[in-house]
Every structure is written in structure tokens, then in C-alpha cells.
Image 1 (cartoon, helix red, strand yellow):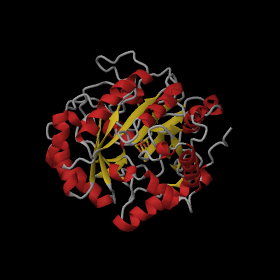
Image 2 (cartoon, rainbow, N blue to C red):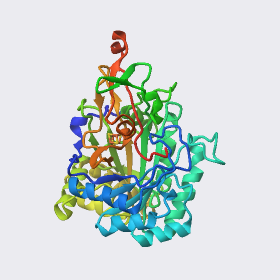
Image 3 (cartoon, rainbow, N blue to C red):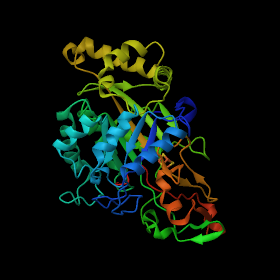
Length: 422
Ligand code: SF4
């Protein structure tokens, strides 16, 4: 049984408010789906190109960033998306589209690639009410994931990631998604599991400026019967039931709890048939430091070509990284017993677990320290997962426990992260 993950043994990603690999741009609030875990009110409104440029200018003024997550709403509903992609690319930054994929065609994908698109993150899970995909399990949704992964691969040169919201009733399927990602190595570069969150209405009242506000009027304020406190360690435990060697290497902690894993990153070195191992903290530290040294920025979205260098990673990083050393040993064993198998192309693939906002028993918010998904509101950077609050109330709401006994149990409020189409 592997030891529980201890944050002190992992690499704390050096991302912060001012120097962060990601900027979160929302050119639209409109979406063509209505997913259970979505945190954005679906309004059929798009930003003009001038408004998008104004948001990009705010990012450029306030944040050193490497890639722009173009989200929403679903950005594919915005008729000027290619022009938006071109704007980001013209800044020398990596445009990544976060989409549910519903409106994607191969022709549009080719056009977006020509405009400078670096990659896509598809939000696909079983609670999106997709026409033709209702009542499917997460495993059955792999068929749809494969359709998108194949489409992206057929265009070539684009990064391909998948987000999936994890609910208490789908937690047990996470290892199947990790296995599916492994079988699609080379096509799928990142798999992201976002733990479901919503406001904890039973435990808290919410206030802005001393005045009670109706959080239940917000999209993430709907009454829930689901668990709101799923945590990243539980996901690790479930994955380890299938992959005992599964080993995260890096994290972002919470703003209140240093030992909470808000972003927990793992990266496997594998061929299509075999996972040789998981890189360790030193590898991730070296990768971030080297990228920053040469570009002046931290990295989150790696170019697909760099992820095919699994064997070079084994050769170059084994002296200083224990995880890589283990993977190299495993590969060497395979090379002795099955030389042809060992000659297969080797890839790197990331598995990321995101544990969005937790509201602690006293009502304080445990946010992601170094939040990568900050978006623009009124010329300032704000948490995209809680944007509905400043929009509705002018400021973020403060949670206050309803009754003294509510503080006896640890309780969490939450809102979604990732693609708002989730
Ligand atoms: S937007 Fe919210 S959930 Fe997403 S990274 Fe930032 S703080 Fe975490």
C-alpha cells in the first residue's frame, strides 16, 4: 500500500498572481449545453473583439502568462473565435480553447489551427445532458472522448486535453478514464479531474458588505444532494487501486490550508501498452525552472512534440529524479525481456486533479493559492470560479455558519473550475 501523499515531499508549483502560466479569457457567456456542475450563468451574450482586446490588455498589464485558456460559456458559440485566437497568438502567447466540443467541426478546427491555436481542452462527462449521450456512464462517454481525440489528431500538431467533473457517484470511474487516457497516449496529452462543487446552502448564509445575499440565485447556488467535499486525496486513492505506483509530483496548495491539494499534478512516462512510471518532483522543478529561464514564463501547456520525448526524459533526468529513475529501471527490464516493446514510442501524459474552493467550518474560503484561472472583471483579476458573485453582488460573498453546531463538522462550499460548460 503506497504511503499517503505528503505535500512536503512534492514540488510546490511556483505559480502566483503575477507570474502564472495561464490567463483565463471568457469571450462569451453563451453555451449550447447546460451541465450539472457549471459555474457560469448561460447568457446569450458575446464580447466584441474590442472587449476581448481590453481583457487581454488587463492580463498583459497585470500578469506574466504563457497560455490563454479561451473559455466561457462555450467559445465555439462565438462567431469571431478565429480572430480571438489570432489576437492571442499575435501576443506571442499560446491560445487554448476550452470547449464542450459540441459545435466543433474538422473544418473549423483547421481554421483555428491556421489562426494559431495551440490546443484544446474538451469538457466531457456524463452529467452534461448531451443530446444522444444522456444516461451514459463515464466509461461509455469515452466513445465521445475518442471522437474528439481522433479529430484533433487528424489535424495534427495540436495539444489535446480532457476535463471531467467528478461527482461522488462517478468517483469510482476515474481509474477507467486514466486507463482510457493511457490507451490514447500520443493523442491525449492531459486528463483533468475537477471535483464537483456548489454552494453549501444548508450550512452557511452569505453576506456582502454586511447584507445577506441570495447565493441560491446563482448558477452554483442550486440546492444539492451530492457530496460537496470530495477531495484530491480520495481521487489519488481510487486511482491507486488500479495504478498502485501512481505518484503525483507537484501541487498548488490552498490559501488557508497548506496541506490541501488544490491542483495536484502527475505525469506518466509510458508507451501505449505500458506505463513505465511517474516523474518525480525534481523533474517538474527542473522543467518549470528551465522554461522560465529560457522564456521568462512558467509553463502549463507543453507543445505536443515535446511530450513525445519520453525516452530522452528517461536518459536525461534519471540522475536527479527518483520517479524518472524508477521509470527508467522499469523500461530497462522491459528492454531485456521484450526488446521490441521497449522500442515503442514513449510519451509523457499529465493527470491533473483540481479541488476547487472549499469553505472551511468558520466560513473562510480555501482557494487555490496561485490560481491559474483568474479572469478579468472590471479591470481586475478575479477567480473565474466565483465570477458570478461580483457580477450579482458587486463583490465576493462571505459565508457565515448558520448555527454554532454547524462548525462541529468540517463543511465545504464550492464552485466549479475548469470549463464552465462542465
Ligand atoms: S478559478 Fe477557483 S477553482 Fe479555478 S484555480 Fe482559481 S481558485 Fe481554483
